Amino acid sequence: MQLSIEISKYPLTSDYIEPIKGFIEELNKDAGLHVLTNTMSTQVFGEYDTVMAALQRCIRWSFERYGKVVFVVKFLHGDLRP
Image (cartoon, rainbow, N blue to C red; front, side, top):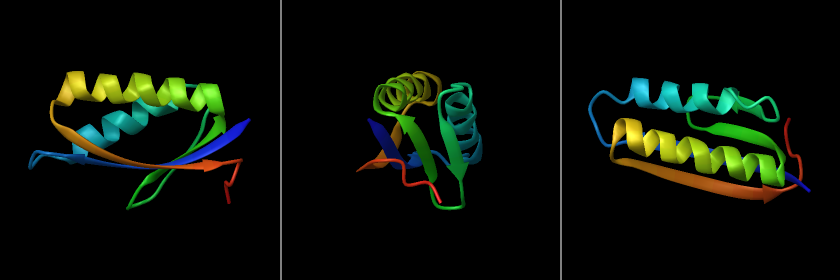
């Protein structure tokens, strides 16, 4: 089953660029994902289990590395990439 997600990350710090870029770089390490970024969010497309495993890994990594962060995620069934 294919999955599309849209994720926004809000680091609770004045230096917010590095935590956002770091999270996107971590997502891009997974070859099974198709990752698109824009100024408002990051979109991730792929097989359901692959996307969910990467999301779990990258969110944990982000919390451990950067501390308090807010994530807002939308999940959509199917591959909805443009």
